[in-house]
Length: 529
Image 1 (cartoon, one colour):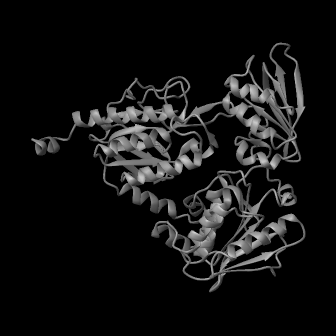
Image 2: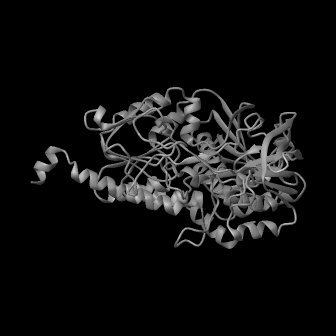
Image 3: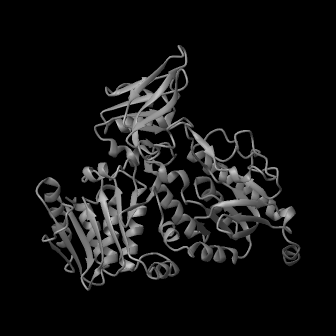
């Protein structure tokens, strides 16, 4: 099951075990059970404190429990093989079961241990989903830190009957005590916030107690991180407040156009940026959702940022890099069937449509790339483009047209997504030339039609936005408000690309530096003299 390099890597990790662990498998007949046995035997052979047995009686076969030998109440169950994107999750489960301390703040661990109810989580993932590991790892950690919490982590491709019975058409899909808990990516703090109603208030109090920053960056994507690195290296006290660190990178798989990097993946690049943030001593505040900006001229010389959780942050200079999100179609049926056949991430949810017919709405790079990737999994893809021609790069168009199971519709306006029995069964489009309407039977519709800036919270304020909500900036990232700068996909910058956002973030940071040195507080000027 494991190639030599993976075995060597895992053996190195297992050297960190502090106490014995047990792997207990429930197996049936078939190749998946045989592969599970092989995997567990290989793991057990790598360290003397790992034992594997195959006498489990769980109804899900194949599955296996990872548990602490000294405390059988602390366990997680993997149903199916946790390989692909979930191999790291398996490694962490082994380490945490063996007493290796997690890299999580003590305050967070104490909050997990303080939960007093019984929580039985079931979570469905796919091996190609890059959003799923965060949820898998969060639930795994909670199960090992609190004996009243259990986590069963289920690979949807192995348990298709369950996926169908529970009408799961998007992952990650999390259930708690048999009921739907959340569909989508969650961090450990997100899970805690839903279980512990007091956690938000405590987080707000902690944030509000922070000293004012020299530079506060709102947004943790490429633009925000680039900006924060530049200002931190200039010696300014810098913070990043981000709703989700990494931003759209967390939803991006293959990246092949970043100069100096032949190939990487969004989550991997986000991890690298996170390490760089840490190395530069930048204060990272995750799960920070902006509510209101009070400019310095209204608040005694400091810009004030109010957050949804009630916290306030203050700063001498503010850089807005809130990014953008996928644009919705806005047609009947889209919201009704969201996560029930309407999807926005082909890498996460594509495997759930294996052998079925799907549609991709959008003929730009994102849409054509999605169609190419889905064509490898599904029976057939219909690509729908509103314009008279596809807008994707020529190399992508040529690849798409070479595929035998793809149909391309241009000059076509999607007017409705239809469904039956709680899930998508097709879509309706209008031929923009003939005005005739047509219906196409599909099981899933993947929407890839561009971006909307995350700036709604600024619309009633003093900051200038254009007609579609993008922040107006000059070539150096300055806005109409002194000391407030902006960069990346939330601005009027026409090219929404990673490398462009990084450059724009750097420029905004240099503009902030120039602003700060020209507007140093009087005591700093006196001290310098």
